[in-house]
Length: 215
Length: 215
Image (cartoon, rainbow over all chains, first blue to last red; front, side):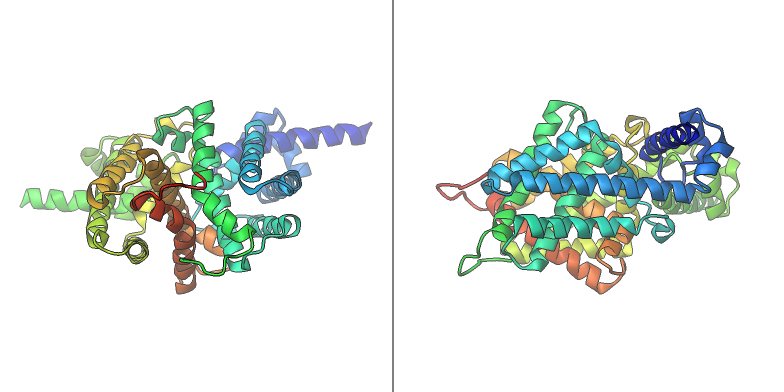
């Protein structure tokens, strides 16, 4: 009974922390804000998470797990599909994930730009790990035929652009004169990602032609 | 004499503000921080810039001007060049600009992700204007032959990825296991941007082939 209550309190803290960390960069978020959001006293939060750093690290670990698990499922869903169709489906799955669960990409986008003392942000070593895991998953499940160097350039550009498009949606949508939560912005993102990335996705996934004119 | 002193004080404030705003997002930067950086008393800053909003707006206006003016020169420099060569040169000019003047892209990157109340950030309407101006400049100077819709998708993806690569360099370089100020990261960015964007740059700049297989 006590354990169950304890688990529930911890869950409430984590939920509030995800919300606050998706609205404020690590350095400006505070345990006080999270306590207020959760309706839980400051000292009780410290009982479960002794420092803001530990709480943030727990959140980063959780969102990286969620994202990698989902990406694994998406790769499974598209592995047998024709490239254009599969890539379209992948983008739709990603946008749908973000619609129901916008916090992970927002937290990443918000903290990605903390240029000054990036190495001091706790848990941020998990971010390179996530990118590596996504790479490994892609290679294992999709079995692309291109050189590893090109696969890396492709995946990194795609993920960083996605983090901007979805994690910084309100700004980028406004540049398009669109509502970040509306269908036109989603259509614009999908069309843009397909337009930009499809040629190189074909290059890295399909057996090479004998000669390449660029690259 | 008094005018000259006044201009110098204003210039000192602007320089300090650019530094602070490139290290802290708008909502967390303060006139107090800027005063400390400039070695100028708070009330004197308010004499020149009555509010943080007005000072930020002045900085955003200035960095947008600088960026658009430079982009205009870069387009002039490459307009007669072969596409791959011209694009390589453009990326090099852009990276060189950022090396000597890193504040504009950092300020953009840092504030782009302020998702919550983006419309409340003063001067931020200048950002869509900048993207439009860059588009107009490109069309006037380079005279691309592709559909306007594709040119927009290309330019927006390119600029948003550049803002991440250069404005959030310390994080993205770390994902590559590189020093953000080192030559390997610059080489990686250049190779990646060429790899991802060259196929579509050829599409939007050159007369269309009779049939397109995707798009």
